[in-house]
Image (cartoon, rainbow, N blue to C red; front, top):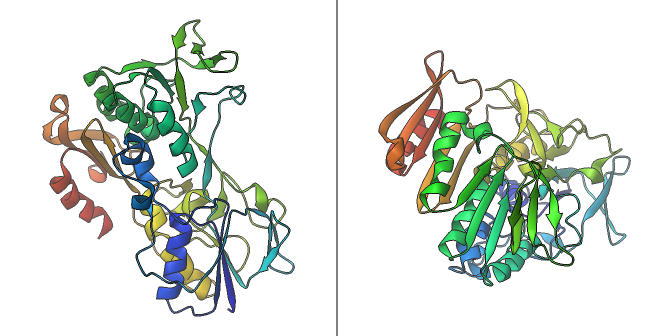
Length: 384
């Protein structure tokens, strides 16, 4: 294998490049990224960076003196994959021919239809997004966050600490019911009320009002929520349009096996765009978590270098964390399918506890709030 192209230059792509070199690949390595920035860390964008506690230099993912011996093509996006000559077509007209290809194009924030022409409406996915939102929050006033997931909750927490008047709108009856289950999702989301942030659940957004700048969020039940700034946090879509017609199977991202191999030989997928097969749940799922983007590329690269001959291993269960209102929230495993949840340390009303999810008596997931040591001991049981 003389040339490997990594399409995507964020954490997953960088992790793949590092794994290639660590596993002995010494050929030509090309990293392609649609952003002009070198790889940077995304979790702080909604927290420390948005609050102004750290700067852009603190986000850098590359270590001082790190040299991967790679060619970096930044500020250019992939527009197609020609399987006949194994070439990645780029938006500037160039093409990169490669024997092996790592797809790491990530996901893009979903936007609210009808919001495109209004200023004061933001998503938060990239460094440029965070820069623009940070400037807006410095103006103060009323912030409305549409979507009560982890990104929305972290933005609400940061804005609350900055002194803004914050409202969170969630269409589901309980925020975070998907990843945490209804009961624990309600407990975690109670942090909003604890800190004076209004949480409106079970109501959808009809649209936004304002001539040039947003001035209110219009709800489907007829209410209007005044807003000086709006953040839309309603999920992300995998960036895989460029792969249409390439022979790479697509379904909610790039369909791939537990080790990242795709339907096209010599092509693997990693990160937020990869719809991995999970043997724990016997289904495909995209894992949009920092830890997955850091750890899983090593397995995909091993498969790529072995030309698919390597037997897929069992990936670690998903792990993620969130910092909200000074509380560290950690979760590992799969809440879906659990038939019981028990609090085994601390108390939910004190916002410091550890809860274990079980199915037929077997632990399948663990949630911790301000219980880092105990959670770490439990997590080791899932990753051993």
